[in-house]
Image: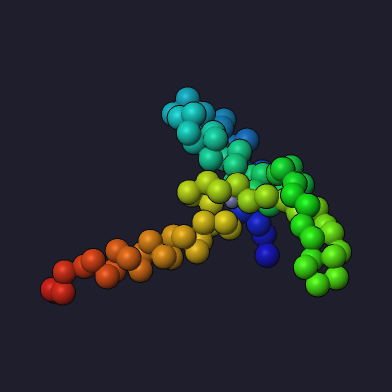
Length: 90
Ligand SMILES: [Zn+2]
């Protein structure tokens, strides 16, 4: 399965060539965050297993609200809250 970061890396030059003059700084920040999310380019954290005390360096997620990798759960929780708030009408 192709990661979103790979899709962005492949098509970002074409996107920028065509639309860079229309992109906002927030768009550039989103692209940078999504490209780095949970990759070797992201900041690392040292995780330790509480059972065997094995340690590993793991990449941080980006935390960007548009990221489907690290914000999927929060988006689903938000969606369920919104569905609860719907008026019961057709
Ligand atoms: Zn992310």
